[in-house]
Length: 109
Length: 127
Image (tube, rainbow over all chains, first blue to last red; front, top):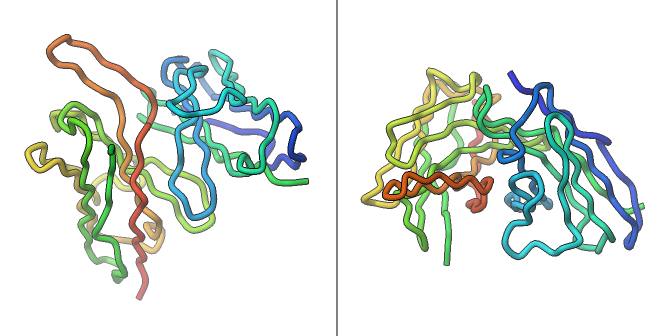
């Protein structure tokens, strides 16, 4: 069973700073099936990145994804006020079919 | 506009049943795999169930296996989740989410993550 671990649990940063979020898998994950989501309070999750590094439609280029195997990273190059939210990584295809990480909260310092 | 709209949530007693629905519009529903994902109050996202585009392949999380049943009606552009033997720990917002695109004519499969989500429907299991 694949377990996704995200770190840090909370990231306190100021607008304009760079955010680096980590997602580590207990077993190798196909890059094709690694995605990142953003969720704000009271809202549904929004897809940011699929295939480990491809931005979803309408996602600003300050969001980027990288990584392979068991280590993946979401980077927000310069935080905008609307980027303070919770971010989840997710894998598809291994047992269980879908797994989400526990999330990283990016809050305002 | 591509849209998913959930309905059917509510308050139910432990041991009771509910049927959630998800109405899809703005895309060819029958070409997409679909999922149910839930989020307990103050907690993270938990995948619940998956159904293939044709409905022939189904998976469940261990936490709901044997109690929940996913189904779809491609003629009605609708996804369903029948929830039986509900427990307090099933209390959550339930989202339907679009998965991979399946082009059966070209025998092609495209996974772009869960790219469309509904607004969610709240299920509360309490006496």
